[in-house]
Length: 479
Image 1 (cartoon, one colour):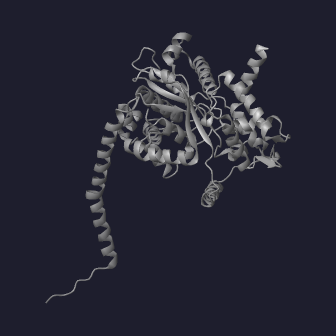
Image 2 (image 1 turned 90 degrees about the vertical axis):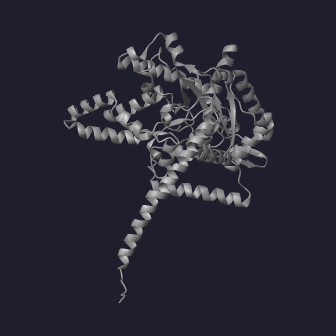
Image 3 (image 1 turned 90 degrees about the horizontal axis):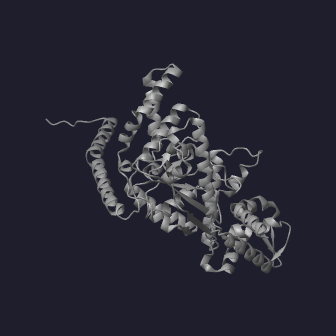
């Protein structure tokens, strides 16, 4: 006689979960991995032939292999022994720390995510927010770079948009690897950034074991031909001017550089400037001593409010893009040639002498970056109002002042970006941006600087102040 067999609901749920996991583990995940591996191979084959500098084998190596290689590197193992001896801890504990540091630093580059998903995101975001332009590029110098060289883009740091902008502009030339601060170590940003080939850096860390692990990774990546982008300033400019360069990553790259080795190390100066920096008010608030550090909740709330405000402007048809974002690429600098000219070899110097020489090179590199900084419309107009903060300017007076500035800058050899090759349009576009943001007030067809916004106007004017000071110095010398 047949009898009904009943099972508890909790047992059915657990059984269903196990069955679902089995299907996921044996069918869905393998198919998913196969699909992405296949797509990645296709992308690498298509893209690698188009790039000026092909993707090196080091960048395509599996992440766990790189982690293990870094973990058991002879220099890292020596650092482990020193740490164990100094801290009186077993080698196993020090080695676990090294493994944690290595997993934190080493990226997980995925060509499909970089060239397909990352490309779409960077292009969409950059074009939505700015009129993106490549102003000047030393094409002859860039074309002469040996494809087997290790290339490092040396950049000024104006905004967190720098990462997106350079990645977008350099997409058809190289696959970049950025050094990213701890600010990006949040889900899911961290996973995306790793897949894009970036590596994380604890800026200002005094942990000697961590610094040794980071140094070896940077050296391995440089020796492996990975194209890197470095911000020697270390942090975003708080006043619009250039910060003094820090030499941490540069020192790691240079201390082991062999002038007679297989690869040259080539630095390319890159300068970026914006008509509007998204973080401008936040950066300026950091310069005020009495300003309290904002909580993460406050930052999220402020960002959300900013997005809603701009979406409302879009709906009403009153939204404009944030002006021009322009990047200039200077002439490449060969480390081999530099060392030959200066008769120096970083490997043969003691620490103090090496640091001095690396600092000198870092200063020269940042000088090259400052020389190719783009002059954009807002920086020109802002300079006019900061020269005479209390003056009311007519439209004709502003144009006359800006025309004079343009003549001085172009005579100096500065790289001025003139939209549509039209000076009047350049002036109008810059003035419109400042009036829309209420940094400049218009009354009775006269314009004046908003008294409460002088610091912000100065921030934008400061981005080109060094060029104007150089032009003024040359004018005095000529007279």
